[in-house]
Length: 371
Ligand code: SF4
Ligand code: SF4
Image (cartoon, rainbow, N blue to C red; front, side, top):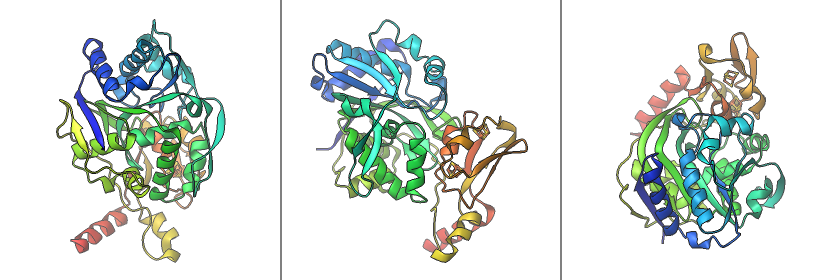
């Protein structure tokens, strides 16, 4: 039966460790056998201090690694950050200090292996370490996401697609959130994490999932044996209908049941976050869709004073729609597929998704007509 646990928690190791240990026991930690290789998969989007709430907090990773070591497993922490060298992420995120004294390796995924995730996508190149670990513990972060509304447990596994292959898959999914959500669920299914923990102690709201978002203390850890159920638990606490989260809608279409979902633990209760404004990416007659997308559909915009012209967005953009220009960047909105990878990777929080004035007017008219 679908179930998830929600515990109140803080980044104070003395109180955090027993909470994480209890949750791991409840989520089936007994599956970790002596000498099992255990991948702890964090959200390591980009180098950021823990107080920016962009990455999974280092003390959560420490507690999970200690639990695995207690069970005589062999833990390693690995991910493929979208931006910056891995060693910088480890230093800036405080992971080196937090994991000091523990026999746990931290590394960037480096070798891809083709894995069939099923139709219509077929073979996807995924991190070999993730495919071959005996147990995967998915340690996600509770954050908003300009393209997918929230990034929780299911989406966290997209980090098993290494480096710029991520942007290739964005491009293949095109201007279609539903298709991208289906890709995410099928990658999640292939990795098949044994348990998922979502760090919502300090969450991220607004223009997440990168540095454009704003930290928001929620004081909760959410856990489940199924990432889909953990994500559904977060939606329930946000009072967000599951159909509004594209990955949950896709998971249900692919056969996951989230009803009835049982929530237990002292953290169960209402939480609130400022969610990104999400509007349809395509509408209207097919032959006018190029024009509609150019002039009416929400798009990435730059806050010129914040842009440092580091070109991270230029190199990550799957559609080659961003160029350095003047004191900031310029977008080719004809080419742009609205994947918002640029917002995600900008190390200076200089980008956000914004509606055009005519697009906002049209949306309000459509909403009024719909009511
Ligand atoms: S918008 Fe951000 S990522 Fe792009 S060049 Fe400017 S600072 Fe760098
Ligand atoms: S400009 Fe940004 S939103 Fe548009 S395709 Fe490139 S990365 Fe995606």
